Image 1: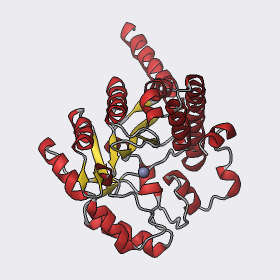
Image 2: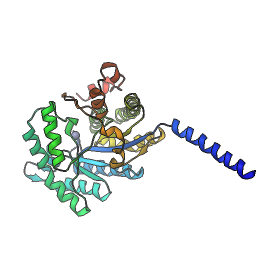
Image 3: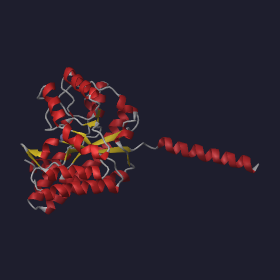
Image 4: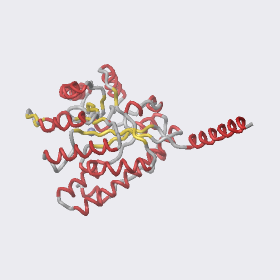
Amino acid sequence: MKLIISVILIALLFSASSTVRSQEIKREICITVDDLPVVTKYFKDTVTYNYITDNILAALKKYGIKSIGAVNAGKLYNGRTFYPERYKLLKKWLDAGQDLSNHTFAHKNYNKITFAEFVLDITDGEPILNDLLKPYGKELKYFRHPFLFRGDTKEKADSLQIYLDERGYVVTPVTIDHADYIFASAYEKAAFEKNDSLKKLIADEYFDYMGKVLDYYEVQSIKLFGYNISHILLSHASLINADNFDRLFAMYQEKGYKFVDFDDAVKDDCYKSKDEFYGKAGITWLHRWAITQGKRGDFFKGEPEVPEYIENFTK
Ligand SMILES: [Zn+2]
């Protein structure tokens, strides 16, 4: 009798917990950081560059995040002059156990150049990345499109994808995109002008905005797929992120998000979806898939906006 009661109890408990589980929304996010070694507008000194790199890597480490840093190898040069101190920043990424991807040499706009010219920008970025990765037992594998431009005609998009496939590249899609670069520019300007109160205000606005961005894409995902996909977030190696990644990641965790590696994130079936968007806009894969599935207008409404005074301050 006791045994029967135990079995019933266990069965009841199991069904109760599985009901709870099925009601829970999956919350997984992969963090990617673009425009390495750093992206700055006002500060161009080695101290700031190291500060940005060290803080970003410390925040990634604190939350156990395995990230992919998308490199513009052209930033290691000024004409023919090579900057060894910038090369060392990329080594710091690898020393910290992070990975690097090719984000092209000069971050060229594929909408404005030919396929052949764009291919040159990809291959120009390769030798130095191969040199960097080799001692760590890694190979150059990932590619991130500058501006998220995949090609503004079917022909250009197909040519590029076929080329990347043949070259063995794995494209790193983005499902959460936003205007962190506007906040980054305003924040850096405030820092450069030593306006600490404005700097803090921009950081707080950015924090609120990024929370809303995450909520927005969660809703978009559920609207399109019926569940919350494993997201891939785009961010940048900027001063604002160096100073705020820690609390942003804490906020993501509070919202229930678990940090996942890129290779785990892309196991989500959503990444098999077709992208037949051939416009000029640099939009997320989530929205590419939505457009491909015929979504228009209202579907995209509600994207969080950058406060006007912040946008104006960057001008
Ligand atoms: Zn970029």
